[in-house]
Length: 270
Image 1 (cartoon, rainbow, N blue to C red):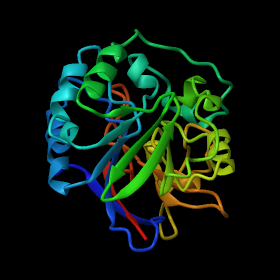
Image 2 (cartoon, rainbow, N blue to C red; image 1 turned 120 degrees about the vertical axis):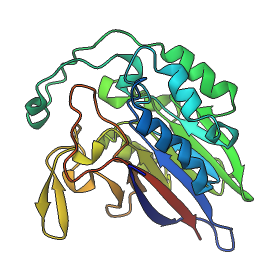
Image 3 (cartoon, helix red, strand yellow; image 1 turned 30 degrees about the vertical axis):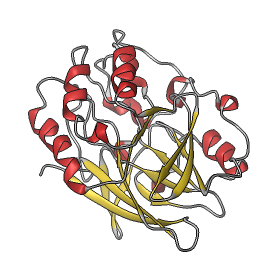
Image 4 (cartoon, rainbow, N blue to C red; image 1 turned 180 degrees about the vertical axis):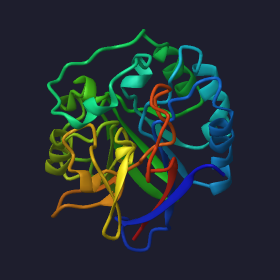
């Protein structure tokens, strides 16, 4: 196994409800050559999740759609939720990695378009819910979960107004799913009364420095504070936030320091 399994519990289920095991992964950045990562993704099924959530950046190459669908094949038989990130729309480009440490002026330099329509169709055909601009309600272990999502905020594709509003009274819990955890989305979902939010994008900082109690991210590549760069956090009375540090990297920056590839098993409890 070439990845770390991060485990967490979120106590948001009503009293007496059975636990729900959620496999949360993000930022696969798959290319045809990543045989070891593909094998790891295939092994995710052994975790026996009840629900799968992917927070985007499946792709890292124009030929990666069939690779991703094959790697996820057994997981696609389970209930699933997904959104996309910028690397599902555009191929990676060579960048100065130090630019991630400078202020973001909003400029985006895109690579060649990727066949995200094929990826969306393939995932949806197997029953996963596309939350890029929609809500979906699913029932897991007798718990009714209302989910909503947005397209990638890093590309300013996040029109939260399309899914905004209080959760349905028929739902036991409500969760949000997005790729890049920008504060504007966290606040909007907080106002609407969601219980938890799942996101990716940060790579956990990708390069982390030794720090008291572990390590510290230098950046999140968005306006999320660095202390929330990976794992489960909560600020005040906001929804719980779980950020996946992801499995892959850009093919042009294949280094992770003190932030190994990871998948998460998040158990919802009462």
